[in-house]
Image 1 (cartoon, one colour):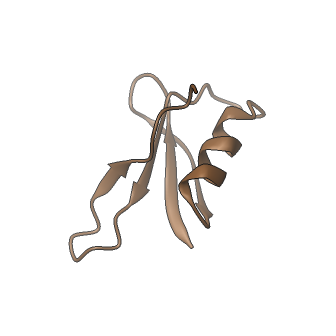
Image 2: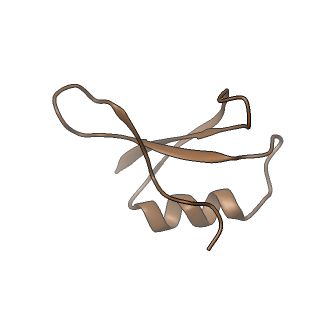
Image 3: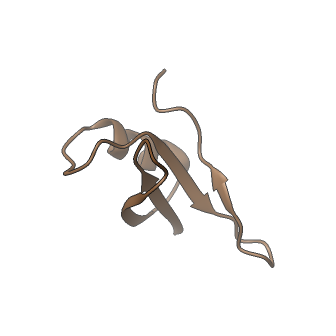
Length: 60
């Protein structure tokens, strides 16, 4: 599992969750059943520094 964080338009983390892959995390973000408007999805890189990286666009 990979850790994901979901950010609003100001870059504030509004949700965090673990998903098996980017596609599942992005689909969850697109579903829209959230208290806050999600504008960006990032995942925690499994590399030694554990940087947060962009998971991909929310719009197809």
